[in-house]
Length: 151
Image (cartoon, rainbow, N blue to C red):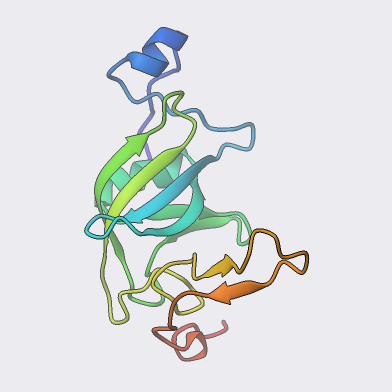
């Protein structure tokens, strides 16, 4: 369990223009986190952090998130070996969203559990398409069935 306590949120002025990280965790204890490749700028993924995962991320410099589906902390790459080394952390103006810039490392250099570099590997084919067809924009880098073993 982390012993890091983040500063209490103070005034709007200090939160929005001050020089102290005062993260706003939601009523569920979570804060959204966007993860971006530090060298290319590509958005790799979106996940949530709680105070403990944020503290561990800052301590270890390895991206650590809170899994809502598994209800536990997870270090990115703990199974796949595709670890995210945190290089920078940003917060938005009202400190209720985080952006971390990472160096994506590992055998496949991928962040997505489906085997892609980025979790954003499909786009809406046309903004006017009533069928909402998606188009793949990337190639799969690894087969998840060979990387993630069911426990």
